[in-house]
Figure 1: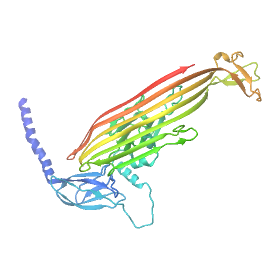
Figure 2: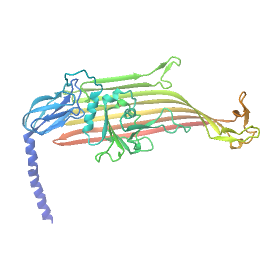
Figure 3: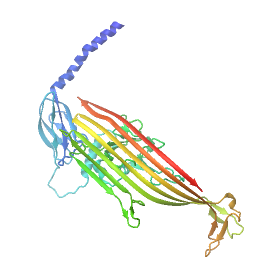
Figure 4: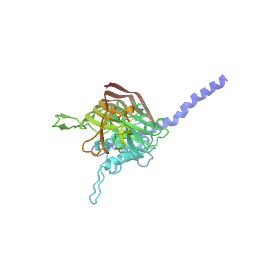
Length: 473
């Protein structure tokens, strides 16, 4: 028995070098072509095609416009780069055995002699369609240019524009039983499936919920936090098992998403002369900024950031009657229907939201990418509710001495009455704070030959703290 295994082990040891000989021989007789494809302004063209003529080698550029063609036989070839709406570019490339040659392409917009045609927003649509075509599942994509086109404040508002996707606002329960003011959770609904069955990820790492269920609210994340958002409507077996309803994957802003340095900022607010202050009664303050740059000997290091701040304050008033009941009084000419109680509520809310993202990346070669993403988001909602209740007791109906009804002057006694009833005041304070924080540590994508290795170590934390103070008198 032991001798048999000894011979078997010896056979495997001898056969292993023979099994590796073909792969070693191929590696010594082939090379690799790599590079980046950009447009006339230097921005990447994800999905652009690259073909080596007279061979079967070819591929498409990734979201950063980079491509890689391995196992190309040594020799001189004509390489063609093309993209919809751009003129194809041919160039001659010499491939040496066992080496990697870098060839970048810059494509120009195609022109033709015809009548004037004006097309708006077509480039972003083409790039989005190219990304969708490269996925095996049914997926919709929002890129950075689309996110900047609309005045959306949160990521949930932007996703609401996709077909088959809408946001479900859950305002929660206020102190007095009414919907909370100023603080809401916006959950993503894909194809009508409840949000609890969806999965929300950042670079493939799941986010956790601060509510009592599995749904993740996206109104805490600003619209400028991502360079791309993917919504998978038909998850496949290679996706997360807890996203049978749909998967929303957020790709943070990257310094390599466009060439060179970039910086954008916006500020919104309003001032009311009659009050002498800003950001009152539905006139919020919104501050947003994003930027990135590349540096290093070969621009292989990049840093990108996003930051946002929002403040709002407003007041709401609600008058709500309780159930109506008929009063049988011998001193009334007809029966009178009155509410069992009436409740007046006035709520004041101050809503603050702030957060940011920092993405540090290192791309030493087109086949190696390392990064560290840090994100923080927080929402603080301070509410103050004042509730006044006028209630009838059960004994008041039919007893003339407990509730005094009097006809209103100038109005027919059969139509309207007024009553002197009891009063109950209640005042409440609510401080609600929601915090979400996630770290993606040691993110790396490395290619060895024809094998891609992706590793990510992440830490995700979320929490919610509520403090309620209530007085009744």
